[in-house]
Image (cartoon, rainbow, N blue to C red):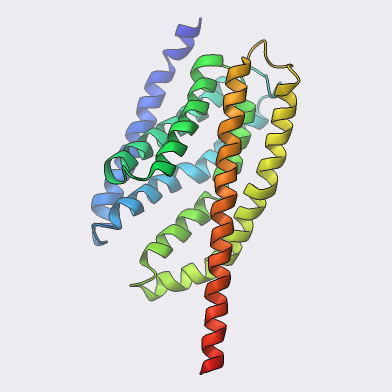
Length: 250
């Protein structure tokens, strides 16, 4: 039964991976061909992230709402598995990118490996828990469009007046949006998830070591996100304070 479930998923996974690979190559050799060789890989990674993030939010939301039996220990529906494959393919593609162009970026490589562990075990090992994983996916990717636009603007702000204006305009609302999602909504949902699994109600379908691993990965990811956005707030405060001081001197 499990083998039969896995077989139709392989073409989907390969198709999604091929799609991301094509998008990445188009980004690298066409969309960003005039960018410097230093910035082109990061920009190409941003484009496949854009291709994944916002669509994943809508797909995951629909997959969650279309399941009348949704819950932390509910069996994955075919639609939910399709969305998981869609995201697994993206993280595989982006992981390859980091391994080739940024092998020293241990934080992102570790993040992608941990995320793949969660998605793959949910999709191919326990066949349950997609509800929780897809809600976390929505919370992780709902800021994707803003974050990738901000990242691209940040990369070009030194040599492009338009990019500098976009970066300056987008930073405060992006930081605020990201802070609410990763600092409040994410932890609140993870608390509810942990509360459910720690009660033992789902251990007949999701073994303890699996849900504990999921929780550790998610808590670690949220903690790093909070640290990252906190540093950005501090940097923004210093930039704005410095700008005000310069005006006073003038």
